[in-house]
Amino acid sequence: MPDKILVVDDEADIRQLLSHLLNSEGYTVFAEEDGAKGFETFRHRSPDLVITDVKMPVRNGLELLKDIKSTGSDVDVIVLTGHSDEGTAIECLRNGAYDYLLKPLEELDVLIASVQRALQKRDLETKNLQLVKEMAEMAIKDPLTGLYNHRHLHNCLSDEIARSMRYQHQFVILMADIDHFKQINDTYGHLFGDFVLKRMARFIEDNVRLTDTIFRYGGEEFLIILTETGKSMALTVVERLLEGIRTHEFSCDGHKTNVTLSMGAALFPDEAKDASGVIGLADRRLYRAKQSGRDKFDFEEIKTEG
Ligand SMILES: [Mg+2]
Image (cartoon, rainbow, N blue to C red; front, side):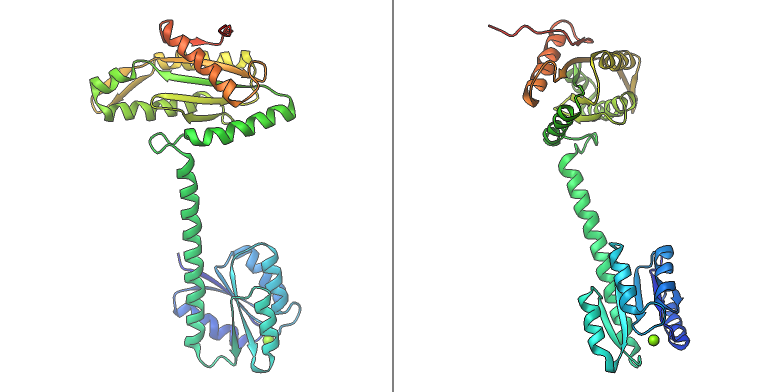
């Protein structure tokens, strides 16, 4: 898609000249005759660059520049100003203009060069922002399943605890582990094992609420924060997961299998007073569910040893 440029100038000749020139360079051009109309078009057309005259009726170029910057927009503004008026140009630069060009516009290649520089810079900035966003995502997500990773759990859990204290609501930590996962890897190979993990992540996502947060806690272990949830609602989720997975066939590349889950859960703040306490309890209950035969969950009281 071609870059869009907004040209604002009260002189029809200049509007025509710039529109023609920039069109022939492949840009989409919108032209307006004063700062007020220019700002309207800026808001409706979201241009990638603005070129504005300074001296105009209604709202001048400096006012237009300030209007644009006050929206928080990162769109660059190039101002056009007369030779006798470089003071205004400096003032525009102080207010965030990208560049200024002197009128009359004799060297049009200078204008084109400035336009290209501004657009390239913007393109780079957009790509950098995207990259930073992707890296931030990578730092908190498990690459295989796309779920949040163990590292991110600690941030989320301390936020959840803070919310729980402030608004006096409960939440549940649910830990789920795929039964006999090693056998799946040994029997069908690691690729199929990875497929089961990915499919399991989607299955869990489909069976909890959007407000719940799911983590890949370890190899074949998942942790779910059921936010604003008490024990009876958690039990409903647990039963839905346990029953749903029994009849869910994992099938890929000619292999197919069924799996079961073992789960342990703990309720905050009723059963634990901090992050490690609530995770530890859910983990011990998961272990107990495994010990007592798998394909089940444990939410019962554990008497503290000693
Ligand atoms: Mg003018």
